[in-house]
Length: 218
Image (cartoon, rainbow, N blue to C red; front, side, top):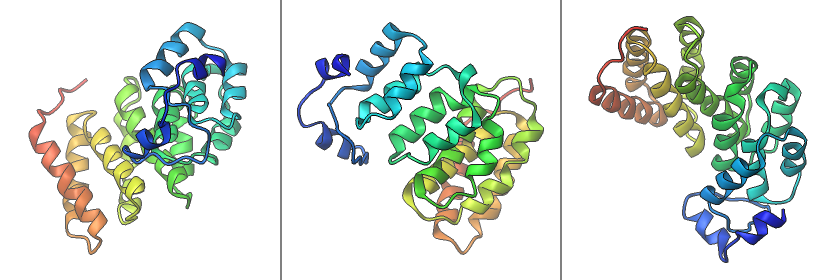
């Protein structure tokens, strides 16, 4: 904690608010670059990560996600952290830098997609987007099976849920030509929805797919 305090800057809460990050926890005003630097210096330390996550400090939670050991992450730990997500930054950092490296990721995507709280539900789709980008070994089938989860959540008009759903749809569609075709088909279906959120997701995804070159077959 002393290392974080040393790198803190004043008016940290205002800086976070400009990025839509709201937290009830203490804010020291450390940059993400500072946190990444500390994580590199500290290395993997799972016990430290668990202690940091429990601190009443925004930056400590981000640092926890960087230093935790994915080989020691359990489903129970993932659920415990997920229940305390309070903004897109702690949600996405945990999903993008830790949870997607565990063998429990796909299971938690399916589980968290059923959650009601905004950031717990976002976690499902942030994790799916992260897994789609980083997991180079899993075949298409498990990702194809997540498209119904994307369709179900597309009508949720909460800002951070719908943005997470869009991120996931883009990520799945970027894995292979087959998944892109399936993702585009879903987007066209959503475009005809009565839901403004679903239509926004569809229009944004289709525009981005149109700009991309199809990824070659693996």
